[in-house]
Image 1 (tube, rainbow, N blue to C red):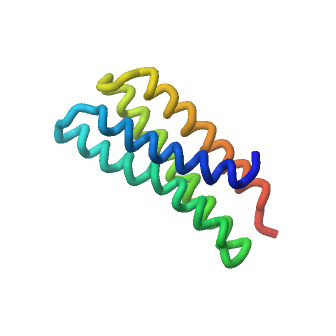
Image 2: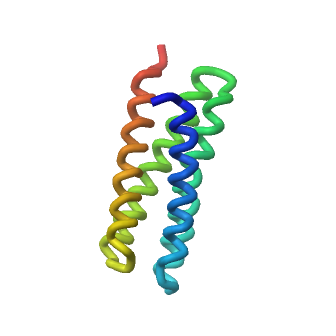
Length: 116
């Protein structure tokens, strides 16, 4: 996968999460999850985008590390939604799978750019 592919993939994932959130019911508890998921899912792409202009290898790694943390958090919120059984399982399953794949890709990037 080329880096530009991951830029697009993380962007599309964030947009898809935001679209998915529109389909969820409104309640205090669900709204809390919506806010958290909207922040973490869009932060993945934002931090990966920033990593591409890192001022140093350490800066690049830091942004990738943040994106990875956000991907892990996003997966957590998606799992919460799954357990609450308040959504379309096909859309949710696709987002869960994509969050896992993005998390694995970011983890691989981080491992391949270990600090010397």
